[in-house]
Image 1: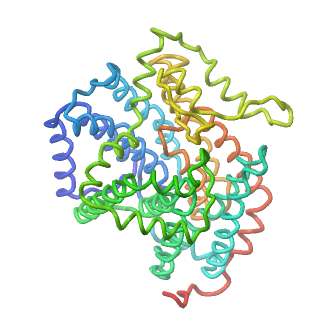
Image 2 (image 1 turned 90 degrees about the vertical axis):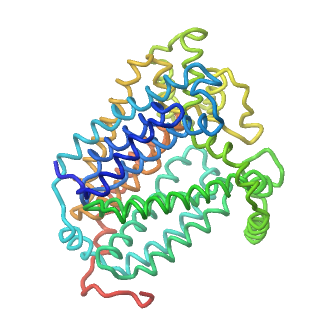
Image 3 (image 1 turned 180 degrees about the vertical axis):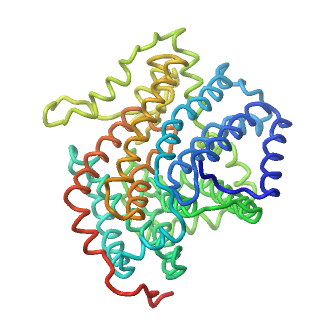
Length: 472
């Protein structure tokens, strides 16, 4: 297996960080997620391979480990508010390994690439055409996203087509970094995506950060100490930003929806920007410290899992597959064939299996159970690992298919794989939402590969020497 090269200083720092985690309160539950992410990243991420599964591993790690971090911040025992949090953290770490094992297998079957081979592939496309296509897709995606909910049965498919924008973003990013040209223009695109992300109710500014991380990881060949330092500094800034956002998010969203119990934006963009600036001006040290608990609580996703273990099977029986089967039926039955098909409400399931009285759709909020607990509800701790292994095998097969069949250009295929899978980064996705997005993306990308990409790639093809754009 071709692995990322790690220098001696970085290896010493990372091992020291891992072992020192045992010295914290609830040390084992801080140590285990960290060990899991190190082992998985070491095996999943290889030089010049798509970085999307590394991002998925990191995001899952954060949502598992944050439960232990929260307990330590509150100076509480790991099981202080549920007797099963320790079990949930251990099961989630093991489950993540089962999920990623098939991906590692398929990763090892992919032909090895080098910096030179990726550069040769990406230079087959015109930077100007990729840029123009991205800009057009940026504005189209904004209008399509706004209109998606007007076409109930096609909402998921429309959102899947929006992923074409991210393919083009990544393609331009690969061109810029591999050729060391148009970097400033790439930064402008990142800033554009980041700041416009604040204007929607769900504040999708995080998405472009995720894609940027995936892009950089994909081109990694070695890990040096300076990279560890950079990662630490960036991580610190992201935590600070996360705390700042947590402290103003509630007020900002209430302003966006005009105080209504909905997830719709009812104010003009200029008003939203002004409100965001005003709220940011009111930030202070006291508010940031007060946001720590809320930030960690929203980040972690082992609490619902733990509460589910508390109640199943002692209060509610195992479903023996009914839970995932219901999700499968819901996502594969078009509403046109079942007019009585209910609306998707994640909170209903969460309330049932956790016993927590959450507000729901009528109050403009949604609380998801997560697909790890969904698997546990059906088959218990051991059976859930089989479900995750099957899901990981499906991920691996799709991953391998997209890398081999999307096109004859490996970099375009990398961009396609990353755009397809990035939305599956969260532990909080429940089985219904996960299957719905997965099936919609499979159908959409199959259509794109068979009918659209061949013509589109031909148009993008470069017939002139690669030069930097004027903004570089």
